[in-house]
Length: 447
Ligand code: UDX
Image (cartoon, rainbow, N blue to C red):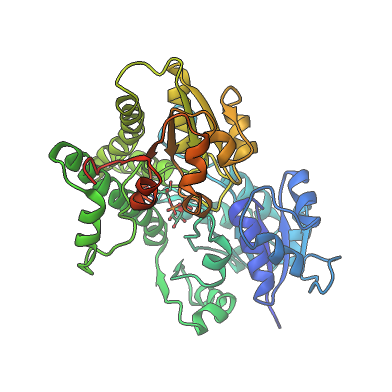
């Protein structure tokens, strides 16, 4: 008989995972403790902008034309316990206030609420990013609370989805990693992921701690790559080098590779910054903090980029104060194809310039509402053209396709000064210069 699947937590990860499981053919019941979230999803809407996700939801949420009806929602833990053969825990693990460690309370409360309702054989699968050692502890909670006893088991299956590509990453993962303690758990997960495994996604079977560590170490590696190239950008600034050429040239070495070597204002978002901090905190608890002291440097290189962008803008404007200067900021989200402004380098730079007296006007294709909420005192415009009108400098801070397609000549007509500063090394300098702009990018003083 086909497996029945539940998904606990319908945020970014859970909503996408639930819709993807329905797409793979399973009956899915998803639970969230926040009623409004569920009501939105039942209307086929998502609380965040994620390309393709609403379409995927509407293919499976009942009530839409042609829908499979396989994806339903509830707030009833007993219903979840009775329904599922496999329960995916997809709640978030944010950074604790005032600490590096991550807040495990949502995971703990999800497991604590679910376990007493596990009366029949079931596999609970953690997908949240957690400190190593958590799965072992949560397995003990399940063993204590589940009426099914040893028939209720835990597995850990970290998620690697990228915002903006969440649907694709979930349906066609580049690897599936499972931490399991029994052959039965492995077999169940092979059944869940039969389609992607059939398409060639590697399936890596390991123990709990390794599965947990795969996720945090992957994110640490990615963060390290970005901070590495940003450190090279700093050296290029000092030595009149060109970090974009440097990245291209080292990237031809396939041991290094081209990806994640785009220098600029650095990484942000809901994952990389908090994950490397939580990893350091956990290593400290384990007495392995020395192994990860380099991550402190990765974090500080990253945070420094934001300040350097502000300085680059100040220098380009003559070196004085921002008072009386009009600055257009293109981009507010932490990356393109997302409306997420959590720890966004772009918004941080815009905010710093504003706080130093600059008149900042921000435009972002999808992040305006979230940006306004976080930073209501910044100026906002409804288009790039409106943001640029009257500007003494234009800062390109999130690399949306829309910004690469802008017509520099048209913008030049409305700007006060044709000065463009590329904080993402993503615009074409030749194009902008041809239209009479001064183009300056981070790590490329002479390019
Ligand atoms: C990341 C991981 O990639 C993903 O596997 C994990 O599951 C969650 O965390 P995400 O937060 O969506 O995903 O963003 P990602 O695409 O990794 O980008 C992170 C940040 O790095 C963005 O702010 C981006 O602009 C920046 N970045 C990326 C660079 O500055 N330079 C690069 O070369 C690449």
